[in-house]
Amino acid sequence: MAFAPVEEQLTYIKKGLAELIPEEELRQRLTESFNTGRPLRVKVGFDPTAPDLHLGHTVLIRKMKHFQDLGHTVIFLIGDMTGLIGDPTGRNITRPPMTKEDLLKNAETYKAQVFKLLDPVKTEIRYNSEWLEPLNYVDIVRLCSKYTVARILERDDFAKRYRDSTPISVHELLYPLAQAYDSVALRCDVEMGGTDQKFNLLVGREIQRDFGQLPQIVATVPILEGTDGVEKMSKSKGNYVGITEPAEVMFRKLMLIGDDLMYRYYELLTDMPVGEIDALRAAVAAGREHPKQVKMELARRIATDFHSASEAKDAADRFESVLSGNQGAVTDDRIAVSQWRANKLLVETGLAGSVRDADRLIKQNSVSIAPAGGEFRAVSNPADKIEPGEYTIRAGKFYKHIKPAA
Image (cartoon, rainbow, N blue to C red; front, top):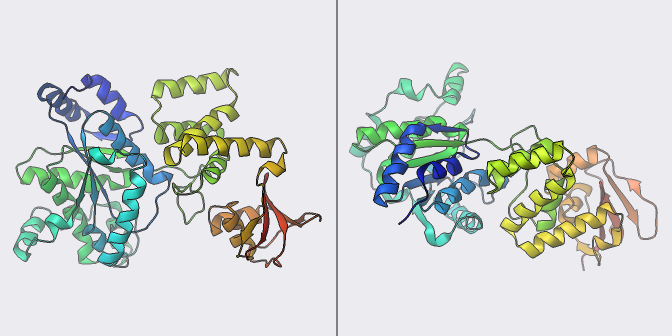
């Protein structure tokens, strides 16, 4: 097949990357691909240890899409065997084991979610049980002989746990080797992961050499800051945007991010070229564009990716209605709800993305409630019980009209 010029490909691939190791090798591999018509094999592994993804996960998925856009083969690797070990990256304790059944169930939801960005026809889906499960004891011993304990303990998380006398289980030491063997089995040209995966990805280069293969190029993506602009996006921190959340909720959360953060989201969460993002930033700085409109375009783009253009437009219209004070346009009917504890009520109505998110809003004195025809009163305690009835509940500038479920 015909590929774009090498430098053009490289520029598109480097957009939003944290590190490319080594860049010159990727340029050489792309040149060979351009001359021979052989697409590169690009692998990303996902251990399906939780059922849902948020925008932080999609930074990596979008880079897979970029390789796919350029005509290369993207391998969506489901770690149904490595998931049984549990990736020790960033852990200060051993992960509790998961069952194969739970992993496979979560894997099905992952597939449904990642194909909102990836082309399923052009994506190679593999499970690493295909080659890891058949390994016998001798095979595993031989694999382990290719790496030393001293090198494994160079990992920051292992080194810290060792210094702190925190237990490290032997099976955790096998994780980087199992991940590296995936690259051997798939004959990868490129492996991508978060910056916290750098050690594991580099082990793959060394193990491929031991098996007589060209070492893979390592590409890492940044860890995405959450909507608070400070900490890593995480459901447990309540600063996330889930990709299965309604378009209206996604849009509202994205409109609440800081103006500086929106350019980083443009870079990591959209396909917009870097030059266009820089031009947007310059236009806002010069007063030719209003940051609110630039942020609304960002929210529209992201909501469209995971829903549709019409749902994103509806979400934008509802948001504008709230800002203009047209509260009645937020919902036409009263939502029937069943949870009457304050924080759970916010989640059920879509005014908060999680209980933790709801707790934060309440503690910031951003939530109030009014009975039909009555006055608003502040909600001060996330655990407050609301007497079932008809109310208007407000979180910041957003309103929902509610009634008890039948």
